Image 1 (cartoon, rainbow, N blue to C red):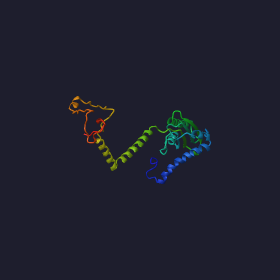
Image 2 (cartoon, rainbow, N blue to C red; image 1 turned 90 degrees about the vertical axis):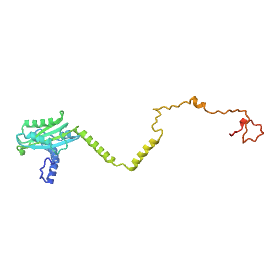
Image 3 (cartoon, one colour; image 1 turned 180 degrees about the horizontal axis):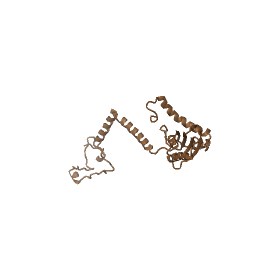
Image 4 (cartoon, one colour; image 1 turned 30 degrees about the vertical axis):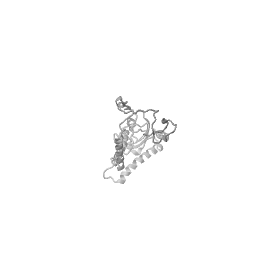
Length: 250
């Protein structure tokens, strides 16, 4: 909107310029249906182009002078207020309205500009009409549908979403509650105190050292005879029970 209005243009007039784009789109469709032409376009043509075709572009351009048809066509397909462009369109409804001096070559120029701006296999439904009240002016109406989004815009959208996520992570990561640091310190302390913290059963198999002969050579061995008659403080004495069946305490 700032590209088409003057710096001193009042705000209400600037908004009227934006509303005028919508008015032109509606007027262009209604004129195609209601106004007869030499190469007529009717409601069936409008339905063919617009039914289930996704994003659409509707524009009207007018111009006078030597290159009036070229200028009017460029205005119709490249208005700064349109959110989409005609690039990639699959269906186009093109109508040219001029005075009695409208030539066939001018109509061909408008059709060629639209074909060059859209896809190679674009289907253009062409119509012309004569309005003596226009004089030297030419009015070009374009309705383009089946427009594909520019694939070059997709990475930028992903980058914006990624940047937003990164910013949120940075904002949320600046605050760490005190208990989070305390828990982390306790976990590190517990790992350092654990005698098995650095031991891995799969990496370090258990190795048990066999006892050497020197360790057992110095051990004191006590001679013991199971048939030896030993006294015990708990023995009542004078019974027939063998001594090895009695509990002995040293």
